[in-house]
Image: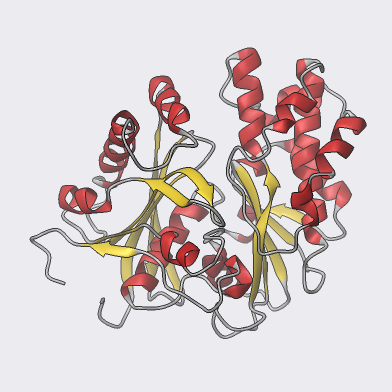
Length: 368
């Protein structure tokens, strides 16, 4: 357990878009955000990305040595550049997520990383929540609550993360703690960047539809969009979560379309999923603040602005860093775990009661 008072924590995130590792420092006591620190990014090479992609959908067992080596080396290389960190939050790489079935699998060895960095490392954030009946995702909402309070929000608002999968957090900033009843509602909205990335990789050998250049030239195929929205996931009440590849049918729905129309249709699907999800908000949000790579896609942002009944802005408009918000979230959660505070609650993952996930590994040279 950390002593009372704020510490400098370092968080890391490697998302389902498989672009690389983000790392960010945060000064926090596990409740308040006191300051934002330095941040960094370590891109995966094409070979590393291919190794990780080949491991997607795999559960713990043999045959993951190459993928584990990529995760460990990339994180160690980046995180070793932050000597001021007093504790590290290490999410690992999600390979499979089936909360009502086999569980959840984030590839990574926090104990080995603690030895390498000579710092306490908090990791395996999701297993405890899933073990108690929760979805295990999303986990950033507690940090979104802290962000809402740090920017001085007084009315309910939403944070929308458009990474590989989209997830939405409705926040009531008047709540005095994130686990309070009614403070948060969070859930995955549907696929976001992951299927678009897969499409352009398969057809054009690109890693993403940068700036929406391809989608901008295409038209949304309404029939495909309607079939997509007919999926049972959209009729399910939150909290709810997705695996990266749960909507593999998207590729089939656009198979006969041109590259531009396929990209436009998939972008429209991601935006429409968010619009469907907004119907679950306890009250209309004052605004939607967008984080993750999707906020850099002007086509996606225009679709959201046209389809939602409130202003839609990138989080940079309120002084936050949309590239690093998830890494900062795991810095924040690491401190909460170390202090025995909850990291998820019924409104965020559907777990029966607020629970603190994560385990702490300490190097032999660091006292507990």
